[in-house]
Image (cartoon, rainbow, N blue to C red):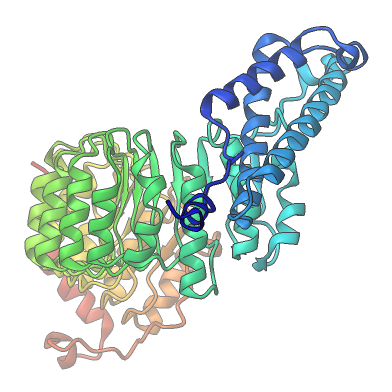
Length: 538
């Protein structure tokens, strides 16, 4: 055989010293446990740790040292790994000594440590929003490197991590991931080029993979589908999430589908927020699947997500399985009448609802009446009812009034930007007397005139816990304004501004009002029309 050929074949072969086997790593951990918990020159000087403390610290030390050494090896792929092994040993020795010194310190101050709990939240979000690179990250994240720290919650929001900073954070997160329960990575890549941002996300996701988080906030990161999938390693490993926030993340239909695909289980999920995304109907179908498999859901927010009728119906049907709901926010979508009716069917068994936000859904009278009829019989503990901006007229007032009358714990009522006029406003006002805890009422921009404003003001002004009445943007005459202000003379701070009121305002379909300029005559006419009007509360 040609010796030249033989040498050529042998040349690529070399002995690699890195990475160590899992068995080698475990042996090192056991050796460090022994060094921390048994007598030696160092422990005689600094004191020993209990077996449990020694094991916890040894594992953490080895994790940190391994990640640091592995990063060095990746920068020298053609080497044999010898320099990585040396760094691995040095880091272990250095951190071991730090733990021993800290152990001695804690032993000397046992009384103080017993009465002063360790900090559990690490938060760098305070202060000016800023980019951070490797050098600043080293300084900012230094407390997380301390062996034996008790941090279970981290918040990296409001700081934009570059690649250098992400690589500094990586070994720290690897060392902490088994103790972390809450992670806030909202707004942590702002202003970064897409390629860099995706790489940063991937580094964080890989470092945190396998953690058992109960809280995860990835909001305000303009993720889109690429960003969601870059978080794949982290999301795929989460089966204990109780709170998930994906607000203002550019969640398109593809991104929503990715969320549905990646998270293995939402059985423990209690809070899910998707506010301000581009979800649309198709995305709503994907999110509805997540909701269907979240039986413990208590707080669902899917507001401002461009969902139309078909997607709204799917979401509402899914919500029917979430009978533990306490707070529901679907504001600023285009559900329409069909969505309102679907939601009314879904909420018939929701006894725990305390807050419901349904403004700007295009519900109209039919959708509003369907919801009011159902909510009258369910949600006995409702405290907030927001159904503003839905083109609701006086035709729906009787059903709404009956529903409101049944909510004896109601503290906030928002019917603003509808078309209730005096007739509907008076019907609503007549049932407010029985709501002793009512604190805020908003009927702005409802084409209300003097009669409606006066009756509404009289209904709320004497309530012991009342805080604010908003009737701005209506058609109240100057005399009517004077009357209302007189009613609030002793508590003017309870009456909102009236700068957008238009005493000359006219309804598009006003007929009687146009025939008479005498506001009192109109009030009397309306009064006689409503004299025998009753609210059906059966």
